[in-house]
Image (tube, rainbow, N blue to C red; front, side, top):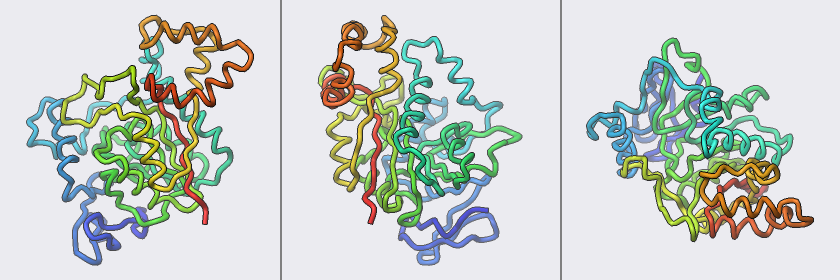
Length: 322
């Protein structure tokens, strides 16, 4: 059953009530939020930048931009699982999914045995690999995205609790979650500071936000977007300073993690020759066993690595406990 008491109207911030299991209705402004295939739709009046993102997705799918509504919930013949993606990317230059898996496990280690009763993943999709960890530990799991893909029969019809939503207009009451997770998602925000304010709002005091596997810009990594995506989609390399400023202004205490994935690659001198900055990586790898160097690289040298080379961002953001 959907927990209606944790939701709020994105238009007036009023509370919502279930209506015949087909929609939620705002008690203040009477806005209607339909439920289709057990997915709550709060994008009833999406922001212009959100519409642009969906239009870009429609164009990538070979559809006219004005058909952007059709990409929000799609039924496909089959859904690619995280384990399948791991196998596909195992021999890739960047091993993208190996990175995201390693960063998630590293972040879990950093928060220890923190009690998580309710968790939100922003940008969650496919088989909800990250949320499954928390489900197995008894947490209520919520997923939001601008789109969801499904198949029939749908093994994820009843779990997690899914909502079409904008990360800049989270449809949840204050202090709802102990943990909010982003994995390679935050760069899609059209307003980074607003997103972080919203995340801080829905987190309980003492809660944690995990920002993982963010590809960021740097002085020597000047490309400001992912050129393989449609120009309407927010695939942007934000600089480290922009992220850090957004975190701090939202009231978070950020801790930055040196990527365990790259730590292991450097220790093993396993640097793919086609990787960006491969020559620099080999030089650093030769220094990795020098006493004290690894500690410096993982500590005081981490921020310069972010700012100069756009080293992937992994952050644990803590909201102050009352």
